[in-house]
Image (tube, rainbow, N blue to C red; front, side):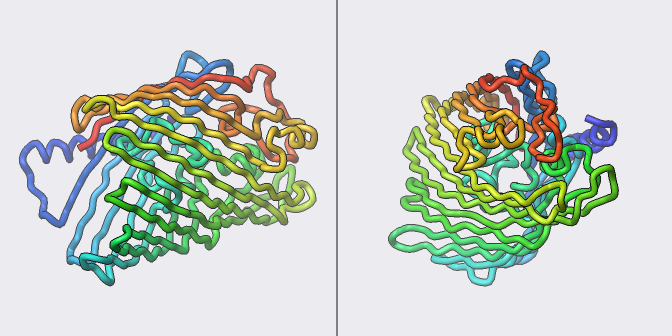
Length: 412
C-alpha cells in the first residue's frame, strides 16, 4: 500500500478506536442514530506464479484488509440517512485507501403492515443477485471470497454501488413477500483492474461511467425459507482519450448482466444457486481497437451447513465462461495469442467459519481452480485482454492452481 493509502487507513482505524472508546464510556446516542463498524485482516496464498490480492504466490500475501464505519440517522419516521466509509486494500486491484461505499437519503412514501414503498438518492448499493448488497461486510458473506464467476472481487467497487436514484417496494401477501428495486445510476469505474482491462496499463486516458440502470425482483416465502430472484442492469461508460503512442478515440463500453437466483434455507443448512448471463461490448475506439462483443455465462451451486452453534461449513462449485460461443477459449487463443485458460475458470471451494463470539469471527477456505478467468492482469503480467497489446504471459502461469485463504474479522 502506498503512503497516502496507509495514512488514510490509519486515520480510519483511529476513528474506529475513538468510536469504540466512546461506547466503552457508556456514551449514548439518540435512538434515531445507529453507528456500527468492522475490521478484518486476511491472508492469501496461491500456487505457481498465479497472484490474487498481492504477491500471494511468493510466500503468501497479507495485503488484504478491510476497515469500515457505517451509520444511519432517522430524523423523521419517513426519512433516513445512511452512509458507510471504508478503507480497503486488496493488492494492486484495490489500494485507493478510504472511500464512501454508500451514502444516501431514503424516503418512504407508503409504510404499513402490508407494504413499503419509497425512494433513495445518493450512492446506492446495486441490487444484483443475493449477495452484492451485503458483500462489503465480512460477516454477511457466505465465504471469504464470494463466487468469483458472478461477484468479481477485482471489480468490487464497480459492482457494489453507483450514484443515482432508486425506487423500491415491498408487498407482503398471503402467498409470500415480494420485493422490487429499480434505479438509474452512474457506475463507479475507478477500480484499478477495470481501468487496466481497457488501457492495458500503458494507454493514456480513462473510463468514465454514463447513465445506466439496475434492478431486481425478489420473492420470499415462509420467512425466507424459499427465495427466488431475477436481477440485472445495463452499465455504460465512455473512454476519455489522451494523446500517446497509440491514439484511441472516445469509444464506449456496455456491460449488461442478468442474474437468476434461488435459495432454500432450513434450520441448519442452506442451498443456493445463481446463474448469470452477461453481454459485454466496446466500440468506436478507432482503427487500433476493433469493435467487439461477447456474451458470457457463469453459475455456482453452494451448500452451507451449521453443524454446531458457532461453526459453519461451506462447499461450492463455481464456473465462469467469458464467451459462451468459445467456452474453452480456443478461438480467443487463435485470434490473440493469449492462452485459452484466461477465458474461463472452474473453482471447487471448501471453507469453515468459527464465530468465537458474536463480534469475532475466523474463517479458512481452500480453492482448487482450473483456468485463470478471474485473475487480474495488474497482478499477473501478460494477462491483459486488450487485443492491440502483445502477449507477454509467462509460461509458469498455471492453468491448474490452488488458493488458500484465512480471515479474522471484528465488528461492533
